[in-house]
Amino acid sequence: MKTPFLQKSISTAALSLSTIAAFAAEDRPNILYIMSDDHSFQTIGVYASVLKDYVKTPNIDRIAHEGVRMDNCFVTNSISTPSRAAILTGQYSHHNQVYTLADELPAGHPSMAKELRKNGYQTAIIGKWHIGTQPEGFDFYSIMPGQGKYENPGFMESGLPFDVKHAVRTQGYCTDVITDKCIDWMEKADKNKPFFLMCHFKAPHTPFTPAERHKDLYKGVVFPEPDNLYENLDNRPILKSVHNKISGGRFADKTLPKEDRVKDAYQEYIRTYLSCIAGIDENVGRLLEFLEKNRQLDNTIIVYTSDQGFYMGEHGLVDKRLMYEEALRMPLVIRYPRRIPANTTCKTFVQNIDFAPTLLEYAGIRTPGYMDGRSFCTSLTGKEAPDARKTAYYRYWMNFKGYNIPAHYGLRTDRYKLIYFYGKSCGTKGSIDKPGFQPVWEFYDLQEDPHEMTNQYGNKKYEKVINELKETLRQAQEEVGDKQ
Image 1 (spheres, rainbow, N blue to C red):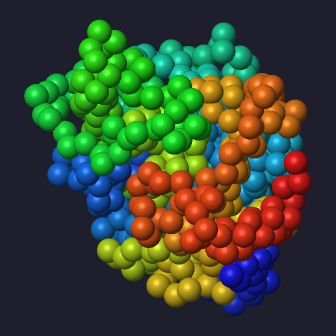
Image 2: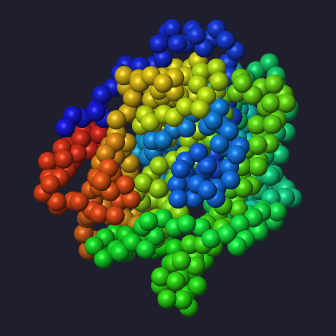
Image 3: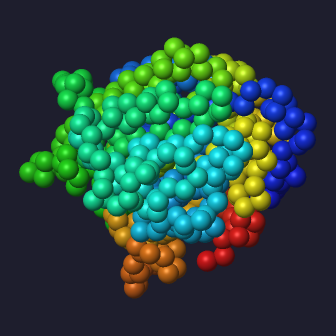
């Protein structure tokens, strides 16, 4: 097997002079980056899933219909704080030093926001921050302390002491309030300068609380189930031992037999979750309407994504973290008619560390040398860039702290996935070691087994492929400097 992970063009590190000149010759675009927390691709209309006939996301779908839907966007570390840091810095966890939920982005660390600001952009972040330290590189911030609250949330704002005691309480439902703040900031922005706005919704993160107006939206609806909701885990030691099962969560009636409990909990989970999504989509519509009314729609790059994927009952799970497809894969739709053809689908492999280089390229800014990511602008035109990813490298560091999930790393290709559950803390904050844990390898043929229900590690049929993938994985770690 070839080692495509290592194929790299010099264009990864810098834009060509001709590309820079092309962007400089036109008005630099505004950038509206919209990100929800734990929004699964399975619950967005343009991503076909078992729930496709029940999901109502016309405004998010509009972004895709008038732009591009990315089908192979993968997170590098499927948990909130590390993913947010990776997006902002364009770096893997081992380079930005944000490994787990217990870490904070170091003060003074370089970021996409700083690059845009020093190149003339007005910058703001509004909503969920969850990276700990005071935001840097933003002209304005209004962020929720920690996870924030669904109802009448508080916001720590620029110009006030950076302390939860000085958070400004705002009446209303969090998704509505965040959108109000974003629209207010855009209205006041200097019309002679481009803006970069990160609109970060708290929803649909647990406790999955919808707005009052949406609480009965799916009342009485019976949803179809994923094929692996009732998966037999007798030969799956990792999955069998984790604690993020739908059968033990807040929706589970523990007086019911297990299968009935899972069935009942799944229905209530999906009903509540989709009701949260309705509020997000409504507010995405408000943002689009504002830009349209102010004649800024076509000169604004609009991104909609989530900080990672999320389980909707697959493998009997909720939450994220594990490197199975539903947590690894992020939704990503982008609208920018000047550069991206409408109603297109892109299957190029991209990761969340690639967002920053891509947006910087559209702004006419070279990718800084400290970023691990690479721009995928070329792929959005329908062409294949010479340095386009052929694999995705993943590493979850937060060992056993949270749902009893061991630390692991792995590699995904277009057909295969190799995962190594090593189960060591490696000195990271928020991790614990469990003496006696035995490492586990898992291997999946995604073409034959798209739901990842059969671990083929040890199957002689795949012995050659597995050995080649192990070498590709080793080289990938060497390439990205992940040596722990």
